[in-house]
Length: 393
Image (tube, rainbow, N blue to C red; front, side, top):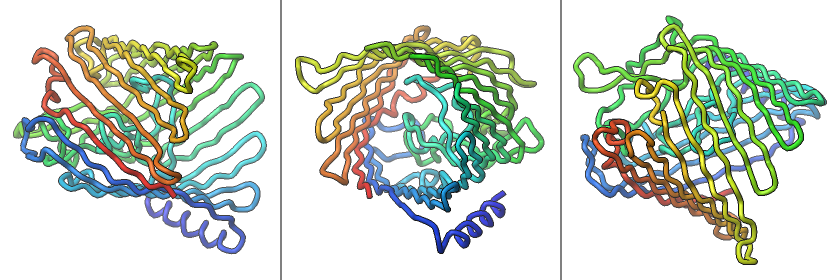
């Protein structure tokens, strides 16, 4: 597959040299993390620094085609797994009035809820970027989209699988057991070469937006098994069929959201998962420019205690601030509460633009759990705050 993508890239660059119109944008960022406690594992650092760069290059080829390439690179002070290069996109697109065709490596996002996007099954998560990060690894794909008057139809053939990234033994934050990514296991004998398929229909009806999807292939989120000597865990990627729905309604100050899926497979018992909730916005508080949004969601997994999902019966409560000032200052503070075990994870995300080219971002994450709440208690000494300065060009 990598040889094919290399050939596509070289061919398109050669063809487009004379007549293409180029545009480029990107960012360079510096990040520092501070941890409040010593870890329960072999990593010793209380501080960590890294630098990252992202480039997005678009090449317009005539009036009906486009080529996009987006390399991403991070170098980390301590974590060798976090130091990595990935191509988020190497994508050729051809489009007409009512349809388009995409081929190469691309990024796709499905979902409407805040706490967890359970319908988002195309791309693999780039977990070394952070627990709350939305960064994804590029996914090899062939994608056809049709745009009739009543909505959108998307079809995907996914000819390659990307394993999830995890922190190394020297990385933080992470659970006490390191994850041995070099010995990942698969249900399918095709392993990372399994051919996956997906489809989605988007249907807007007045103030409501509906999305219906189906997926068959290798699950992006693995389960974990102890290795032979019990010193680490290895990811196990099973086969699954997933069908689901996402819906969002904009009703005056209310934003209603829901995602629901059902999954099953040879090694995956049939179960359902859903996230539902709302966001209510107060605009121009006290005759100022500030908007305040109240976010509330419920996360549920029908497998209950047998679930490998930490959000089997949890609630999210959050506040979103938008100052609507010249610097585009925003903040989101939220708490996810385990309604069974009583544990909580509390997060803060804030950003502000500095001048025309810089932004500064703050992130903090705190885990508070009893020993009986195993999934959260593993992280009880991994609380951290993170500061990031980015230059955009």
